[in-house]
Each structure stands twice: as structure tokens, then as C-alpha cells.
Length: 277
Image (cartoon, rainbow, N blue to C red; front, top):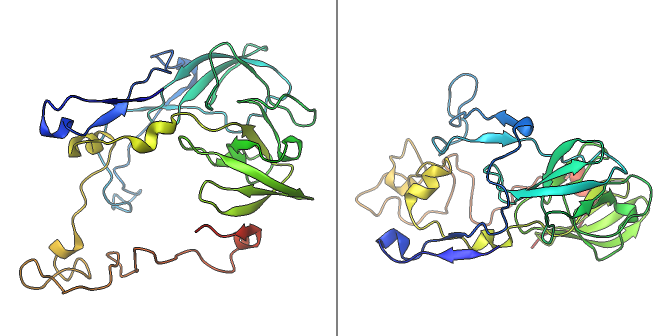
């Protein structure tokens, strides 16, 4: 697992870097765990663009990931570590003793042949890939794929290289430090998986050229200052000067670059012990 640097054979290659995929052990996905993935191009059911700068990209198939880990007390063996085009972390194919196969998010250190298990009540080993309620996990342990509602499945800490940490426990909550630095309360009955997620080097990848972003399904974004006043608050004016030096805002006038958009008084605010920086 690491990065490769490309030789500067072209200007775009000069600083480009990418994954070496050394941890991948199987190139073809499990057919029984695939679904077709239809692209929207950022458009809703009326055909109107509701998400800008989205469209194109390489064709993909959806891998069905087991975020719930609800096959309790049935040991599973890791068959392979695979690439998933729909997420930044790697996924692991697990075969359980009852012959079921499922994909899970692969943590750092999970290798082919390793045995993992998920539990609801009993105490099991604290090792990468095991899943259990927060009340059974010791303080200071790194965790990922954390539930916010018991039985709903992991909803947070699911991207490459991320992990949260259990800071304290006070019935009926655990104090969890998030990757952002925020400390929030999550019920002790909610499940989490042990370990830090794989593909830690993802944040260091340099795409190198605009075309690589197009492969990912992202379209170019025009500067507001290059638009007309009817299209953007920064638009208009003579030449490149535009509207002078206004406060940076979105096309709909909302301040950007540091403006806080989180609403106070919402339900989730009660569970935040310390805000992110």
C-alpha cells in the first residue's frame, strides 16, 4: 500500500501521483454482490440540474457493502482485498461459516486469511475488522463505520484513512472524538468496527490533469467573476476587475470561506460536547 510517482514524460505527468494498488489481491468483484449504478448527471426527476458540476465519468458497478454487520457470532474469513470505484477506502470480501459472502470496509492491517467476527453481547478480541457495541470497546481504541442509531448500520467515519477514538463512557453515551476533532455523544448500544480505514495515502494523491477529474464524473467549474451579474454576485464589471473585491459568496449569495452554516438548536446539537475547530 503506497503511492507511485510518474516520470515527467508530459507536463501533466510531472507532479502526478497515484496508488500502487499493492494491497489489492483480486481484480474482479464478486458477481452476487454487484448492482448496476445509473448516473444522474446531477439532474432530478424533472431533468433539472440540482447538483452542479456533475456528469460523465467512467462507468461503474455498485458493490453492496455490509454496513450493518448484523451476522452476529458467526466467524468470517477474509477472501480478498478489493478496489471499489464508489469509495476511497478498500473493501474486503468475507466468507462466513454459513457460506454467506459479504463486502465490508477494509481497515489497515486486515489481510487475506484473517478471521473476523461481529457480536452484539459477548466480549471478543479487540482486533481490526471485529464489530461490537461501543460499550464493549475499551477507551482509546480507534474505530470506524460507527452507527448513530442502533441497528441502522454505520453512517459516519467511512472514508479512506479515517478513524474515530473513544474518549470516555458515561451511561448511556460514549464520548467519541471524530476525525474533524469534534467530540460528540453516541449511544453505547450503537455498533462500531475496530481499526483505522485503509488507503491512508489517499489524501496525498495528486491528480495531475483536468482529465483525471473528468474520469471521476466531475465537470469544470466557472469562476463567478467570469460570469454576468445575472448569473453570479461576483459577475459583471469591466475587464478582469469585475465587481472590485467583494466578500466571497456562492451563486445564491451565501458567504463562503469560513462562514458557518450549521444550524443552532437542531436535534444533533445536544450531542456535541466539543465543536470542531
